[in-house]
Every structure is written in C-alpha cells, then in structure tokens.
Length: 129
Image (cartoon, rainbow, N blue to C red; front, side):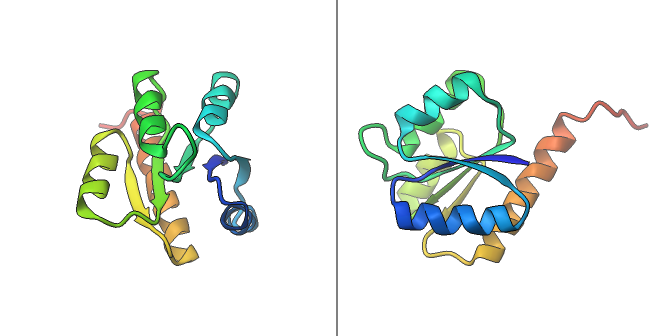
C-alpha cells in the first residue's frame, strides 16, 4: 500500500515513516500542504496521513482541497490538536479518521488497516448477492 505522509516535523515524520515502512507501507513524505497538492497531481496513493499544524496551508485546508478536487483516498488526520472543535472540524472537512498525538503506533496501524478495508470494499469490482 502506498501512503502519503504530510508532516512538517522532521523527527516525528522520520519515526512515523520508519514504523509504517516496517509494517509494509511504501511511504512518501512531504513537509507542506503545498507540496502534497503538487505530488497528488502526479501520483496516486492508497491513503494519506496529514498533520494539521503545517506551514502556510494547514492540514484542514489541505484535506478540504483534496475532497473538492475529487480525491477519494482515505485521509487520517494525525495531530496534537485534541479539542472537540478540531476533531469535529477535521471530520466535517473530509477526514475519514482523526488521531491525536502522542499515539500508540499499533493503534495507528490498526486505524490505517480499517480505513483501507472500508475504501477497498467501497471500490470492489466484485458484486455479491
């Protein structure tokens, strides 16, 4: 599975990327919302993990832009912002899930698996009766 990680903190991104790579994900990392938009114009990903606190274009605006542009891949917001308002806003703007830092890596992996299962079921070419 190919994953886009959008995180501006190098140390956090390195740890997440290492953990996800060890779990079998092919991880592309970008440090800004603008760069994520550029990459998504050329590349296809199965899922995105987006931080809210990005420079210039925050993760909420990025998520909203992705949805308006028709990107249907699952989006998991991974952020330090834990207020109810932030969680609701993130989900309302198009995120499929919302996780607060600090987090347990096993939970992140489980949530990613769940999001991928749901997205694959929605796009399956197999019809059953």
